[in-house]
Amino acid sequence: MRSFGIVALSVMLGGCASVTRGTTENISISSTPSGVEAMVSGLEVPTTCTTPCAIVAKRSADITITFEKEGYQSQTVQLTKEVSGTGAAGFAGNILAGGLIGMGVDAATGAATDHKPNPVIVTMQPSVPHAAPRAPKKPRSPRAPEAGT
Image (cartoon, rainbow, N blue to C red; front, side, top):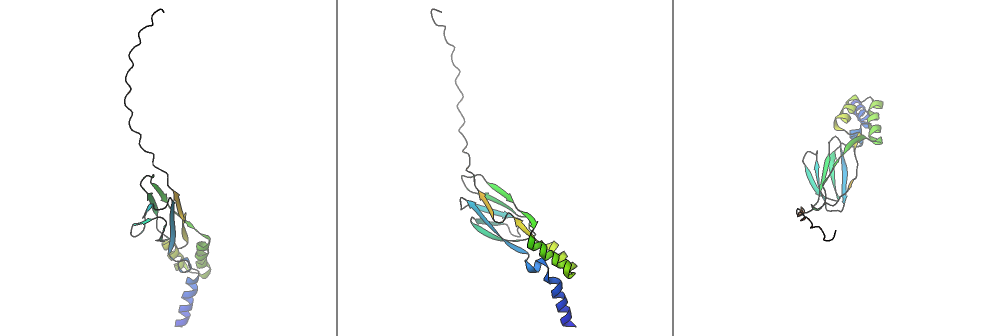
């Protein structure tokens, strides 16, 4: 009887996206030029890396990456979460195996989702140097009328 319970549990979790795909994913981060500081928020611990780099994130995390480098305009990229084909298949496996618990786990962990875009690639734009303020123009003195007119 005990082995029947273990087999039944294995069948129910077999299609579970959290088992087949995991609850974390690798996200690649790069930029042109390289050497840009990428500040990643939305993780359990805020992380900073220098491009090119990669992070491991929970699939359920709401991730924002801010890119900064001296001489360039900062850029922020908000990642979205989308159900991928393999995530949908794993989630659907719960239905076929009758695993309502697995569906709940997948929904809570975001196991059926992927972050987009991945890889995250940005092209930094040079900062526009602030123009020096112009000196005020001196008023012109009125012209004297020309003789003979």
